Length: 113
Image 1 (cartoon, rainbow, N blue to C red):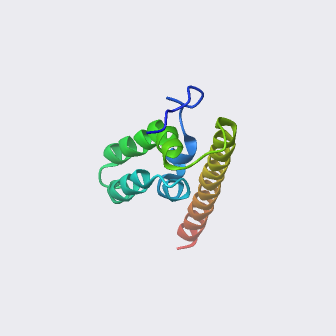
Image 2: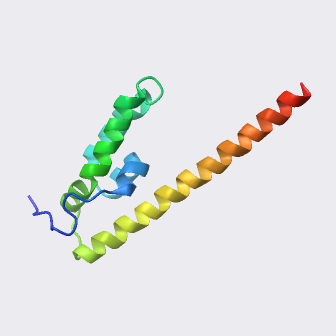
Image 3: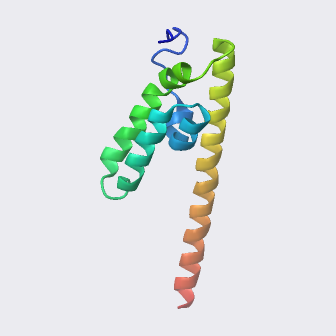
């Protein structure tokens, strides 16, 4: 098994936490995809269990990604993972705006009903 560099060992991976399954596919980290697919359906029924799974993904993400692909360097790895982080937060922001927009529409419709 590939040795995990100290620069990334034990560091949090936002891409794995926020984009879980998609991140797993993009990083050839199939265990992440499997865990995300198992945890996602339970998100509404057992949110603490699902959140625990996603926290675990964030915690182990760097290790799984490093071992699952051939990286040019630690810097290359960090650059790629930073892009995943950016897209994860972008997705959360877009979903947040869409949710607020939907809530405003529901309130407006409710006011005229």
